[in-house]
Amino acid sequence: MKKLLLSLFFATVLFSCTKNDDAVPAPVITGIETSGSLSESSLQIPVDQPLVFTVKSDNSEGLSYSWLVDGEEKGTASSFSFTASERGSYRVEVVLTNAAGTQTKQEAGVVQVVAALPVFSGLTCNGETLSDGGSLAVTLTPGGGDTLRFTALCTGVVENGYSWTVSDTAVTGNTTDTLTLVPTTAGSVVVSVTAANEDLFTAAVSVTVEMKGAFADGGVLFYGTTTPALSFYSYAGSFYPSELYSTVNGTSVGVGGVNDVCYYGGKLYLMTPNSASERAQVVICDASTLKNEAIITAQNFNTTMLGDIYNLLVVNENKAYIGYNAAGNMSGIRVLDMENKTLSEAIEGTSGALGVDGPCWSRMLRVGDKAFAGCGSKLQVIDGTTDQVVKTIEIDPDCQVSDIVLGRDGNVYMLLAGKADKSSSAWLWSPVLTTASQVVAIDPETLSVISQTDILVDNNRVDIGSGLSGSRSCASLTSDDIFFATGGYGPFTIYRYDYSTGTTSLFVTSGDVTGVNTVVNGYLGTDRDGRLYIPTTDYFSSKIAVFDIATGKQLEDVYTVTGDGNVTSTDRFGE
Image 1 (cartoon, rainbow, N blue to C red):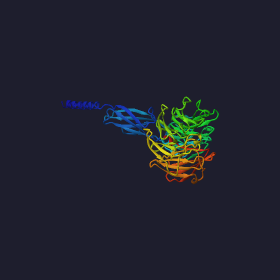
Image 2: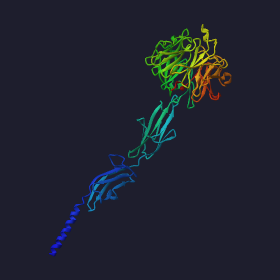
Image 3: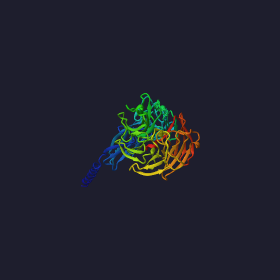
Image 4: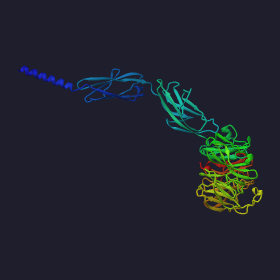
């Protein structure tokens, strides 16, 4: 009996052990995650770079781990960070052991260890170091010739292991660390360089290059109406002389000078004669580079029929208004259709004898969708959509509009010459003015007259806007001033009219200006930096004096351009 009980005891113990072993299942690996690989589809890492393995199991409680690299244990946690200092193939396995000693073994993968990746420290352009994703601003030289030399600063690159792209276009035939780029147009490009190691794994950097034309930030334009001269002072501080247009385009801008200029929509429009066909033409340029984009010459846009073509106002990208003076001193304003290259008859209400009931030499203004034009003794407001006169503002039938300007306050200012005897053509050249000149302020929104003020200092009547080219006025961009010239073809006097106070004062006379001529034959101009430009001429060249408006002092700069000078600022057009 005792022997039987002992046998039953051992049988129970044996059964219990067997039952307990069955309660601890073998380890089940549900997945192995990796991070740090160079590729999602394969296990590739550079030397000395980690690849982390993490094993996942349904019954992880009580498990122990063993990570094997080519059969040698290297780790004992659920995660394993693998690195290698030499290139080659390495087999990584993981073994899971439960409390009962049951093991599950699985290959984690074969790791390909490749050469160290190329390392960029930057990218230089003409010696300036740029970071990845950075940008570079470049101002192009008129006429081209700029060279941008990029150099990749990189280690770990195989010989001839570079490739370059410019705005996603591959640069063929260049596998060195240097790229030479010669831009021809303004705009933005992305320059990228990729470097490869001996296993052809790559790294890359890129920079954005913003290339601006020399005139992109605006400035002051000088142009001559007797010679094909075009000069520019940029707000960046550079002066470009009279060969500017031919430097950029390789040809002259017309044959007889630039009659007028206008800025619109990022374009510069130049109205010039074209003697080959006895026509005028409108030359359209990119305003930032002055690169010629188109030339508009309408069938009946000719100097034989229209005589002097003196004023250009661009209404939109397809349409411009042309002010002209035809035979018999009959003047008017026509619509130039630049898309279809046609020129209309004169806009109704704008045609008549020069300075009597037709336009004078005054420049037209565009304010919003309206054009303002001086026509004899009245101001005509033209709707830029319908090309119809929608408002006539007449102050005194015996006076004549000398000029119109736009003040920095947004109002239109009309300068009126005094009353003149217009019974004969002699008044065009030697008028007898019997009353004071006036400045009339007009609200461009309501088209109502705000004020009408006499000019009463030193008998400084403004010149008529016909034979003597008007008062050649300009409005300051930095103060409440309008500047105008008197003197005709003799020594000049420049006056300042302050429209905030309604007062006029002497600004400077020709005898007080140094280094210039004594005759002002073109329009005055101002800029956003508070300078006044006075173009003086001997009819062969123009010496342009520069004054500080705030102090009234002449500055050292004197710009010399070919022919008689006119001045206009890019800011005058509100763009």
